[in-house]
Image (cartoon, rainbow over all chains, first blue to last red; front, side):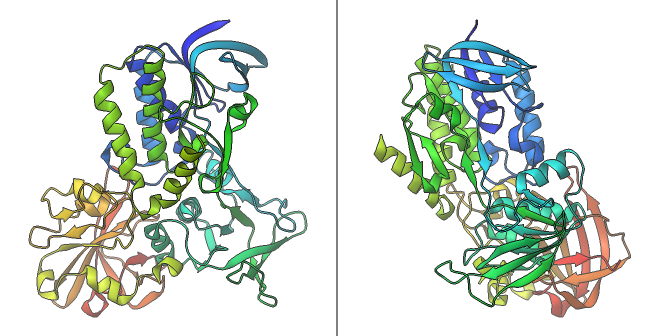
Length: 359
Length: 158
């Protein structure tokens, strides 16, 4: 069985950042990524990022991925691609599935940075071809250069719904409307303003009642919602479209932690089931750490900072002290604090408080 | 209300502009209406004309005495929320960030568009097109001065 100081599961912004810091601390690290390339969701993000310079603000997500990957190349991290971690056991052993083979790795410490998966929406005919999650639309369009449709309706006005709508327009797709069940826009208003000036109607208090089409999507029927989220009879309208993109939120990919019986808690503000973790980012399992969206849905900027903290703590607790430990610990915690302290951080602050109280 | 529609009111827009006398020189108009964690406008400004402070969630303010209208912030802003405005010979000149294809060509007349996405009555003239390394293009356009507070972007006539 292969033995490593540290195993990092997930090669997105959190996992890549964790590897870098842990390597700097002197750990022998293995990184497992189930995709054929590193970068996680960053590789689909053609927009410039928010935050401050320390989180690569004003650089496009795809370029941030390149920076993080090139920084990883400078370390001695052993990278396993197309490698799905399918099992995790209490003695810090994981099972990996790669190239039709299973193998095991034992590690002094494990960092879970598996990220999140998309939520879906229940409505009649929601399995018609032409109905996608926003992540699939980004994969088709921004990685493979394939248009998901000619006339698309977006469901959900969080930052992902707003950004993917903008990217669809950049790709030459007509975005016929963005609909949102709540009474207000969920994401940043600068993103919403970008769409409005391009002529996209934003319909709040509106949801999809059903999709219609013979074999593939031809139109959707929308319905207005009142302030109790009840459908308003007679408010149905039809919108012709060959694509419907669902962007109604993410939930943490907790399955490995649940499998290993880490103590978990359901926190709505964090997107679902998340592990309880100490201020060292350690879960209830000794030497198993978690960072990024798997511990609560947030922006990639926070995921990068969390990844660095997880790398710093996992290495320290395994006896590898980072040369700049004290400086980094202060600086990183301060960065997270700043990212979360505004009104947009209220939800995550509230969610993290619940996790803290459950410890 | 911008939180429901994505469109700021005329009053909100006017509050981001300096007095018209000041616009004889180009100035940055920062249409950031919501506290979000973001500060590239402040850190990119070579003249220290934009202030946010250590809490990067605060809304940026522009010191119009220091602002030269250079446009560096307009291409740095991840929200495409900054344009440079100037008034000259009865016309309003704007430098706007633009990220769609096809790109306009200098000398063409394109539709001017307002913040609700509606086409303005008058066309605007493409004065300059500057392609940056980071792929956000800065387009300079001119339009009749009465559209100063209405104009936000351009749309191809094709």
